[in-house]
Amino acid sequence: MGSIELLGLLLVVALVTGLIGFVRTVWFISIGYAASMVLFTLTVGVVWADKISLLVGAQLLAAAVWGTRLGSYLVARERNPSYQEAVKEQTDRSQALSLVARLGIWTSVSLLYVCMFAPVVFLAGAAALLTGRLVLVASIGVAVMWLGLIIETLADQQKSRLKAVNPNAFASEGLYRWVRYPNYLGEILFWLGNFVAGIVAYAAWWHWLMALIGIVCIVLIMLGSTKRMEFKQDDRYGGDPKYDAYVRSVPVLLPWVPLYTLKNIRVYLE
Image (cartoon, rainbow, N blue to C red; front, top):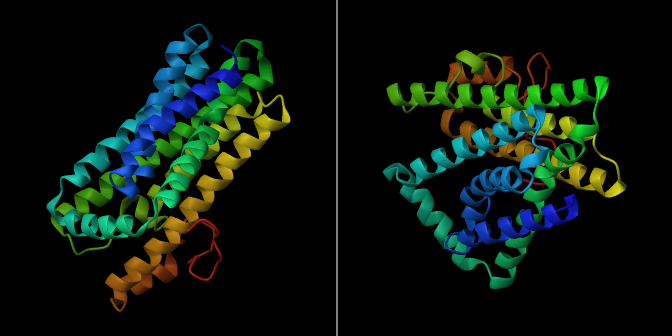
């Protein structure tokens, strides 16, 4: 099976997995997202077992751990009684969407997930031909993936521990001393690393197109998520002198970069 056929198979996997979104629309971009990535890694591992080098294996494992971690969190959240009010709001919004709108979301996010994952396929297909500096570049990309995964995991753990002790407190310790949204930074690094790992294997214009669509869209989505979280936290903690000082002194997303808010920046995938 060639890379085009494999990508087509991954699209089928994403579409079938994404059917869960017709139960609740938000699941297109939550549970369907996590499950698709896990199933992508399993599909590539089975179909292209003979192409899985140590480097590609590390990339696949990172994607599998990332998807499993996100999926576990989402399932646990669904069982949380405090999340039920949000569930009701999501259900009400879902009922207002037409079938055409839901079909559009289903197909577009399925295509996006394949584009995001495509660098794995391209690297796997070319890994046997890589030598020297090309292997080094791909290895750096995979290392950045793992770094992003570690940052995102630690950030979520630190915030969970804080909320278990004081549900009304805002996170400002640990990784949150360096940036206000380290979990979003971790996800951006994860997918940026995935894109970089595949650069050495982009051999055709459509390779670049798919990979660029994937990385640009997920970065814009994470910037939009950061912006929404800023407004949400301002509504909850604004007026607290400690929170106001924290916002003024800690960068919003990138450590050591004096950018303290995205609220006045236009983000096209919010």
